[in-house]
Length: 249
Image: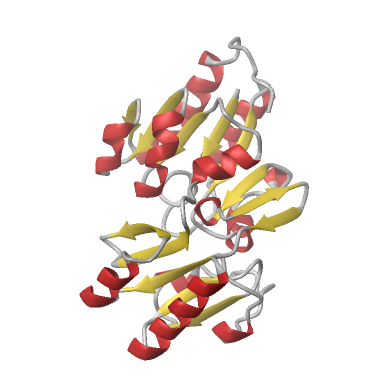
């Protein structure tokens, strides 16, 4: 079986890398013949530093489906060029704080004390550029935009994930999501672990799904577990599905 894991709030917490207990559970999962795929809102650039190097050969989905990572190769779906122009004009007009991700480099405007900024490019292998210098961008995060900006963005032909607690809206290509990323990898049957609004569709289409924590999106999952129970649940499901048919990708 294929096991698909979100990262932040699911396998790693407060921006820290995966801990030893969860890492051991993932290795146990692989030892039983299962494949692991990581699917995150982070771009691939910011996924790799929190994932142990033993798992860097795993397939990955970044930026909620905009990126796929297979055998060290990144493929990316950029926002439509006209939408990119509209968003750049909106950012300039309203002096918005934002993060825009290209295939590897990025543009950022805002406080360097923001938790989101501290998680960007932690290994210093990407360049911080002006947004106009990027070769295109796959998504834009707007930090605490005013209500009239949010209203305007909702009129655009884009996909929006709104993280109300963090006061962030995440804008990417129309109809983009983690399930679309999985489809590009040829994956249809899987077990899903997640914790946030961008995991809902993945929960709904999984063979079995696990929500970590008490977020209301857990209503769409098969079951909920607490953070301290994640490693045990991975091992439990790995054993439970060990003798199930392994579906081809």
